[in-house]
Amino acid sequence: MIERLMKKNPDTLALCDALLLLETREEAYHFLKDLCTPQEISALTERWRVCQLLETGDLSYREIQKITGASLTTIGRVARFLKEESYHGYQTVLDKMKK
Image (cartoon, rainbow, N blue to C red; front, side, top):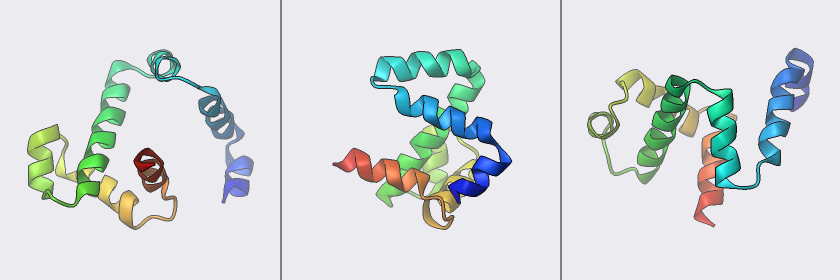
């Protein structure tokens, strides 16, 4: 899969490489502040919070919406990528955080 991405958009791979160089929470925060608008950071933060709440399996979409303010569409999209899509990006990070 990564080979297809390299052919389609090497700049995305360059961004991935840049992310891998970050070593501290402060570095990651500063990079996000430089790279993203406040609205983009807010959207990313919201999706990550939704992901964490979905992972618990204890809450309905409506309950997650009340907690986060995320739309049901966003919650559904995060849920789909968490459980059904082949990338497993959310799950990879969740699993690493558990260790």
